[in-house]
Length: 165
Image 1 (tube, rainbow, N blue to C red):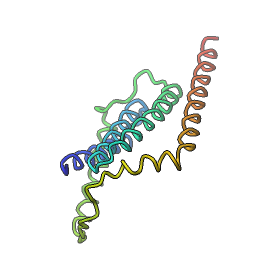
Image 2 (cartoon, rainbow, N blue to C red):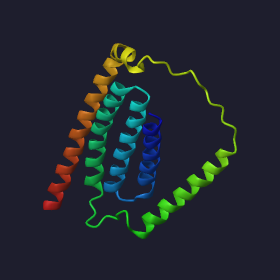
Image 3 (cartoon, rainbow, N blue to C red):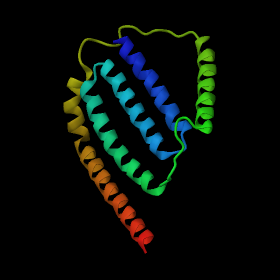
């Protein structure tokens, strides 16, 4: 279980570096999806599988809207990929900053707290509470995502009509 959480945290860091270092929205969206999947893997490792599934589905729905919007606004014929010099340079700079921060934090005494997690699955009791208190908010956020999708599609249609003239 600890290996799965460790791999999820490593994926979260590399996905975040992929978002921060890439100027192209196509590859940055891929980094966001990797970060979301890695974060959900960490939640699964902490026995919150239902919350992880809900978070991943909602986040990917939002990412679909963001990707459609960014792809419409920044239509580059040749976007900068992972192998370009500027992207590799930024990845190396972020990795060096990460290693320096890790070496500074390694000297700080870390107190391990044990006994905080029990054998009760955290998301089984939280599912009813989430729908009881946050059901309306979930419905409102779903409608907001749907309206945002229609706005993006309308912007793309207007843009295509102007380019066709």
